[in-house]
Amino acid sequence: MVDSVRQVVINSPLDMHLHFREGAMAQTVIPLSSYSFAGGVIMPNLVPAVNNFERLTGYLAEIKSIVGEDLFEPYMTLFFKQYSYQELEQFKPHILGIKLYPAGVTTNSENGVAAINKTEATMKYMEELGIPLLVHGETHGFVLDRERLFLPIFEYLADKFPRLKIIMEHITTAEAVALLDKHDNLYSTFTLHHLIITLDDLAGGLLRPHLFCKPIAKRPEDRAALLNAAVQAHPKLMFGSDSAPHPIDKKEACGCAAGIFTAPIALQALVDLFEQHNALDNLQAFVSDNAQKIYGVTPPQKSITLESTPYKVPEMYGEVVPMFAGRKLPWSITKVNNLI
Ligand code: NCD
Ligand code: ZN
Image: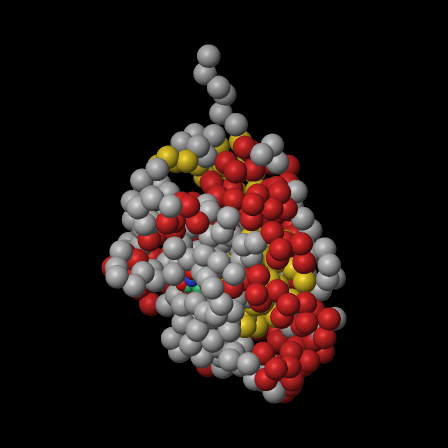
């Protein structure tokens, strides 16, 4: 007996943590997101960083020109530095939030924050103006402990600035998930890959550079805690792929760049994952509705239809190797409908 083809429709999926890069790489990767997503939060860790008006407007113009006719809203972020109240007032209509990187913890974060206590004036202004703070929450401790060691800083900031929305980006540990229920103003994004892989997939056998990212994949218990919260679509969490493309020569190298490229396969893999956990009913909240409520945004109206027919993931997109390269996923995107 042949199984009949099943369908899943997702309305206005959002990717709330996304690296688009610039130039040729942006030309390759932006259309892959703007085709199947209705919007995304664009990370500012370019060289030089997106931390002034000229960079912000120039980058937005580049993104819009590549997005073209696709219905896709780029939600822009600024790279955290000390900004004055007046600067932030001017930026506010053009950004969704400000992204804080501790100095040196990940790709292009060298000019990030070296001392958290020097950031508080800016955070106070952000709290007053209602600008969310997005944080890459890792220290310079032992690599598996970096996120856990950062959690007291999240708690400190959450208490000190109770009206500031703080998003714990791409969290990977059970302890971080637990904080969502402890502080009203803490939220988080989850990636696809941290719901699927553990450190074993990266380094338990032959080293898999295309699964190397920051924060590094953790233990099975951590993945289980993330998965449990994701499939329930915990209202304080949002999907954010952290899709982070690097050219193959930077990944298959001595000194592999951190970042996993998932944007073009994210929706297909999420449908598969949620189906396996009998949670398809919660996927809409996880990939769109929660983010709309948390950030108060209304994305372009667009519906994406997926069907249970296999999708063979390409080996490469331009110079970038995606997660699941060359493998078959059980779901394909078959239709994109613009609803306006
Ligand atoms: C990201 C990148 O390549 O820009 N890398 C990663 O491993 N996730 C930066 C980041 O989000 O940490
Ligand atoms: Zn990222």
